[in-house]
Each structure stands twice: as structure tokens, then as C-alpha cells.
Length: 393
Image 1 (spheres, one colour):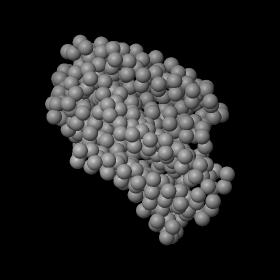
Image 2 (spheres, rainbow, N blue to C red):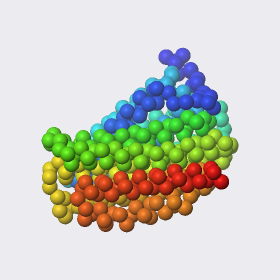
Image 3 (spheres, rainbow, N blue to C red):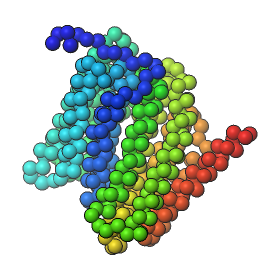
Image 4 (tube, rainbow, N blue to C red):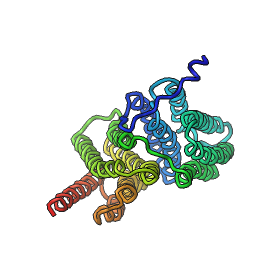
């Protein structure tokens, strides 16, 4: 036993790539995204969207901290692998109780406390492992001390929110996660979070975006359910695939440029790009995609039931077009923080997407999906044309 504990972690080389175990770790994150989307689709309302956003942030932080750990050491060997596997169990349990975490009334505290306790356990595992990994690095030990202080402080509103429930819960949990996330940013500014392997770091974030995009396709099946497949449903499914492809290409073109910029940066500048452009700016990218997936599920459910949404018609439009606007705004932020250059079309795109929201509200579900597809296809074509024009010049 002493021999196992004394084994030093295996440092990751600068050319380190994503390991199979890291992809395996992402499976619980996939499960978490499905649970969040399912929760929001069962009770579509503005408050539910806000609650979903909060638990998405909780899942994002849970994934993010082990992305940083895997950038410094191999997490698929030794004690680190064991600790990460235990953390997987914590994420899995947290995701399992997400739909029950917002219920109110007598006896509902249990699910909320399970979610908080599993999240706290995961954070403790990460802090212990990271401090052990960085035992010989005084600068990083200072960084982890600052971050640990913010993390522990964030647990107070988390537990209080779990006890109170209701509106107080969402306010306290949002504050707690903002403290937790903000602590990482402050630690980066004060001491720096070095990105050891920029290629690995960029690849991990790109892969998690692809995972989120997969939720759009899963939502097609969830929306249809066991209803009979008709021509309108087939067309809506193809439009959803087209939307997913457009979102992928819009992101991947930006991600490729940002990856090269991250590799070229050194020292604190690389660390700041890693924290701001990837750890922070990628969360609204992911959240926007999940909202689009929710809109797809609602639109397909309406088509499958052959019923109009009536007074609820705002929700599919808000999630489809609002989610797209959030994705595009986050992508522009990601580019400004990484390559420090955003084309005018990339800045204008989220502003153009928002006026489509009230239009989509009064369109049939299939037409709304068609409008979103057309908008993204035109945007993708325009950006491809501007890139070619720049290269020619």
C-alpha cells in the first residue's frame, strides 16, 4: 500500500494528446448533458432554462478541473487513474439526481444534498490530486492554494441553497458556482495556470463541444419518441443534422485558428488564454448548443404529436434562436481572447440571430427549423468566402 501511495505521477509531455481513458471519463459528462436536457424538456419555462444553466455550469466545472489535471499528468495510470475513476462515480451520481434537485416541498432536500455532496467530493478529490501532482512546484502550489480557498468558500452557499430550495436555491447555487469559477480566474491572474500541453488542451475542449453537438442528434429521437415516422419528421431530422453540421463547421474553423495561437503563446500569456478563452468562454459555447438541442426536441415533439405549441410556442423559438445567438456570441468571445481578432461578420452574427426569435415564434416547427438552417448555412458560406478572400489578398 505504501508503495502505491509513494508512486509519483507520470508527467505529460508537451506533445501529449488525449488518452482513451480521458474519452472514457467523458461518458459520465455525456450522461449529465442528457439528464439536463431531459429535465428542461419536461418543464419548459424560463425558470427551468435558468436552473438548467446552473447545473450545466456545475457539470462544466466538474469536467474542466480534470481536463486541467490531465494536461499536466497522465490520468490513465496509477493513483491519478484511481482518483479520477472515483470522481467519475461522483459525476454520475450528481447527474442522476439533477431532475429531482429543483423540486420543492417536504422531503425534497435529500436529492439536493446528494448533488452537493457528490460535487464537493469530486472537488476534494481534484484538489488533493492536483496538490500532490504539483508538490515540487512552488508557483503552482500557490495557485492551488488561492483556488482551494475560493472553492471551499463556494461550498457554503451550495449547502445553504440545498437546505432552502426554491428561488433562494438558484440564487445561492449560481453565486456558489460563480465564486468557484471566479476563483480559478483570480488564481490565474495572481499566479498563473500553466498550460503544459497546448495541443492536448485545445483538443479536449474541441472534443467536449462535439459531445454537446451529439446531444442535438439525440434530441431528435427524444422528441419523436415512439410516434410514427412521417415525411415532415424525416425532413425535420435532416434539418437538425444540417444545423448540427453548420454549428460544427462554424466552431471548428475558429478552433483550428485558436489552437495554433495557443501553441504559439508562451508563459503567462498562454496560461491566460487557456483560462479565459477555453475554460471560461467555452462554457457558453456548450450551453448554447444544449439550448439548441432542447429546441430541436421540442420542435420534433410538436411535429410528432401533430399539435401546435399554443401559448408555449415561445419556448422552442427561445431555445433554438436564443441558443444559437449564445453560441455565436461565445464563439466571438473565444476568438477575441485567443487570436485577438474577430471578423465583423462574426461580431454581427449573434445580433442577427436574435431578431429571428420572434419570427420563429409565429412559424410552424418545421418552418422554424428551416429558418435556422438557412441562417446558419448562409453564415457559414459567408465566413468561408471571407476567409478565401483574405487568403487571396
